[in-house]
Amino acid sequence: YDTVHLITVMDIKMGIVYRIIQILILVYIIAYTVILQKGYQANDFPIGHTTIKVKGSGYVVSPNGIGNKIIWDALDIVQPNLQICSVFLTTNYLMTRGQVQGTCNGDDSEEKCPCTNGKLTVNGMETGQCNTTNTPPICLIEGWCPTENEPEVVENLIQGVENLTIFMRSTVDYTKFNITRSNAHNNVS
Image 1 (tube, one colour):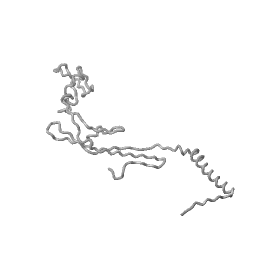
Image 2 (tube, rainbow, N blue to C red):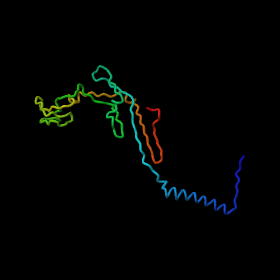
Image 3 (spheres, helix red, strand yellow):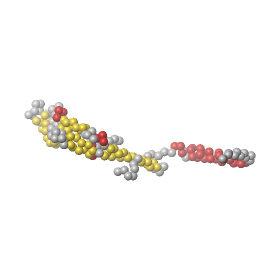
Image 4 (tube, rainbow, N blue to C red):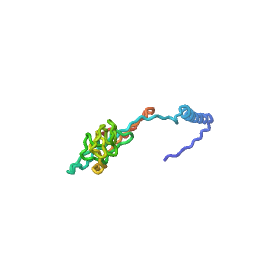
């Protein structure tokens, strides 16, 4: 077994040298490192980026009633695809059956005559022409026709959105300290 041996050195010069070395180390740490170089205040501005990738798909039952499915992949579901500090996933969409780009009557509450050519409205752009066969007369618009009519709107929940996978990769560089941190693995695509 080991025992601790206590040795008492009675040499004053050796004790003074020992204490001077301790004081020099302490002065170096406090005076030079902490006070002069401000080591306690060392900081760096991180440079980093984050990317988000959505994988998966969903479907809705076709609005024509046949029972066909319309498949939505990740590119369709992430709309609009550019968000600041966020990702937007479509889980429900509204569709007006038979809507196509063209010229048609505007909404009687928004596009009343007289019409201004080129005026942007909620439903499209006014053509400057009035349809006087309607009561009251309504402006003709260029846009999605027929305009959205609430009773004819079909609500579609996108099935399978809850099974999407969202990958978020973040990388931060601290150039002053030569440190890089990332949550991405090399084999993840």
